[in-house]
Image (cartoon, rainbow, N blue to C red; front, top):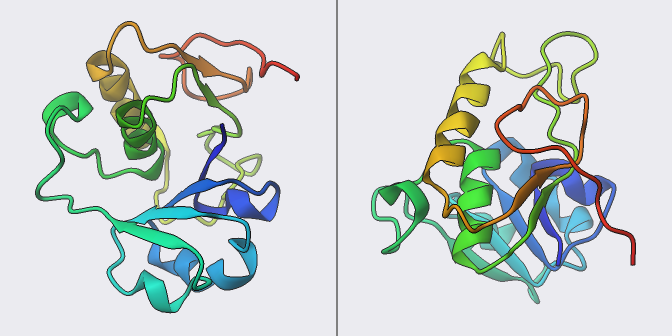
Length: 155
């Protein structure tokens, strides 16, 4: 099962999608036509998505019981892993998680001058997810080194 994050809708359609950045919400109507469930912390998202999409608003101050780490990590990749684990996704395959600084970056206009802080957050997530949950990083050039590298299985 695929779980998309932020702008991943531009390259693949998913049944489940998570958007944290408000700037992406305004691009959603065209991109999320096939998404059944949208997770976000943006309260007015329902105005921006197709009426058939079920919106799940996340409360970052009151996470559900048994969420990995006991709190949400305020990063779309890290909290996306928490949501996927909470929903029972296993294994979890990370696709397109580059987090590489510089021009080769997937999103070089990031307000972060460096992805170092985000990589540290991913390291913390790797320490709090259940040890039996398999998380595989499918991008061997990724800046994330805390999850084992592997391939996305083909059907």
